[in-house]
Length: 289
Image 1 (spheres, rainbow, N blue to C red):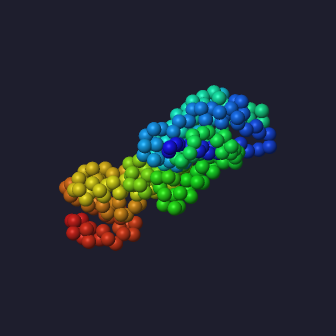
Image 2: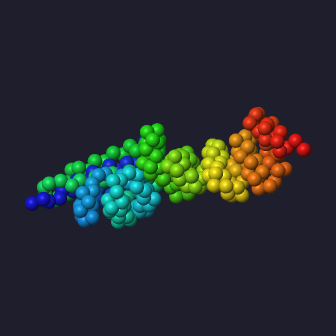
C-alpha cells in the first residue's frame, strides 16, 4: 500500500551578535517545538494529489513578547505548501521566550526552512531531522537575495528582499534591490513603487533607476501614439535626472506632436547644450524661426 512520509527540516537562524546574548527559545525547549510542529503540520491533500513536494523557507521576527510577526515566504515549491508552513508559524504566537542582549529583550530575525517530502512508507514525524543554527541574520538573508539576483533568478531574489521592513526599520539597500528585481521581471510599476519609497527616505541611487523606469513607460505610450500620457512620464523621468538627453529628445518630439513647438525646441536646445548632436536636424527644421 502506498503511504505518505512527511520529512520536515527546520533551521532556526537569527542575528544576535555580541558577547552577552541569550538566544530566543521555544517555550519548553526543542522537544516541545518538535512536538508542536509534528502535531500541527499537515501535508495538504491537494499537495498529495498533485505530487507537490519541496522546501519552504520562511523568515519571521520573534518579538520581545514572544510573539511572531513579519512572516515572509523566501522560497517555496508552490502556494499550497507555502500556506501550510505560514499557518503553522502563525500558531506560535506567544510561544517563544525572546532573545536578550545585555539584559534587554530584543527582536530577532529567524529563517525556518520546512521540507515536505512524498515517499513510499510510513507516515511519521522525525524530530531528529531538526537542526538549529544560530548564525543567519537579516544581513545573510539579503546576501542570499543578491546571490540569486546575480544568477538571474529575479523572482527568487525578490522574496529575500521582500522583508526589507521590520517594524519601523527599513533596509533601503534591500528595498532598492527589490525594485530592481521587479524591473527585471517587467513589473515596471512595482519597481517604481519601491524606488519612490527609497527616494523618499533619501536613497539617491533610486533617482537614476526612476529615470530609466519612467522613460521606459513613456516610450511605451509614445509608441502607441498616446503622446500626452507619454509626456507625463517623460516629465517624471526628468524630475529625477534633468540632464538626460535621451528623455529630453523624446519629450521634445511629444511636445511637437501635441502642437507645442516652443517647448519642443526648448527641450532640444537643452539637449544640445548637454552635448547631444542628434537634436540638431530637429532644431534646424522646427526651431530656425
